[in-house]
Length: 462
Ligand code: ADP
Image (tube, rainbow, N blue to C red; front, side):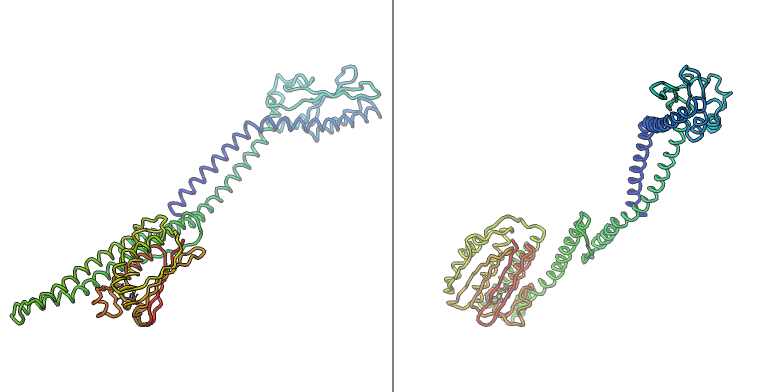
């Protein structure tokens, strides 16, 4: 059994044993009293039946004929009875009855051991004496005495001890069955509880070794499966970050190589006096240096976007305000290209999101819609409010994206038309940043494009 199983077993065991001990005490102190009440009640009923029989016998025959009934009554009931006639003469006492001897034998008591005991009269025995008059023709024909049982009487307590022993045996027996049951239950419950925990532990050890691709199968809706869900979410993010980190380094090196190699070529050629350090060459080198600076800035932006995966400052934000803000800041560029802006969005589009990320997403998309648009072109921004979604589309009348390029435009450093994009100052990072931020918000982005323009559609959950 697992460690957790052993703990569960111990807890169950303590609970069950405490319950059994409590039941034991309860029986000892409470049932004891009830036991005598119950037995006396039964005695009362038997005596009432006896009185009816005695009445008939005395009526038919005589008072003395009653002792036969009393004898057989004594054989079947453990009740001591005495019978007196109307004048107070004792006609029957239990001393000579087989019943008395039988009881003495059963309780292991011999008359010799009880010198004080004189059973000639009922009052001589401990316990309350009860009597019942046998009335025939409105006259008392005889009086029947019997003893109530009580804890003080050795014979009676023998009966009680016998009863108590049986009850305790039953408790111990059921206790043993319950202990077997709790062993089985602890085993099953610990298996159910520990299985996902063991999987979690092994997966966590793998993560510690740097293997982030861990997905634990998960069923149910309790706290344990919530823990598994949270773990899966964490490893997913870690795996994604790790992938980005690995790829970033090689992509960045690749992107830097071109401008750095160009500058190095110029410098070597100048050193070898192959070319002179003229204005043109200096300008070329400056442009390449600027490319490096812009690349580094974009990469910084990208690193920040990745951090958003773990660091979203979500709040209620009006998307319309954000879009209006972006448009205002880009006004200068619209004028430069003489672009027309068509805005068809609701006044209030409230979503739960990170304000800076939203700004960056729409800034990048609108920047591209300007950058890749024709002179005198159009940019249309529309919103649609669905049941649990806000849909925003940004359409331009630009150069469009070919079908071959379309699947890759969200990849880092991917530029559909490299020479044109580079000329536009593109680095192929803007959409990669946008996609990271969209994913961090559990939102979605789609793109449709042909040679009349492109439409980027963003879908936010509300
Ligand atoms: P860049 O900095 O090069 O614009 P992005 O990641 O923003 O990088 O975009 C990647 C590529 O996708 C761009 O180089 C461009 O070829 C293409 N692209 C993005 N938006 C548009 C658009 N609205 N119209 C045409 N092409 C686009």
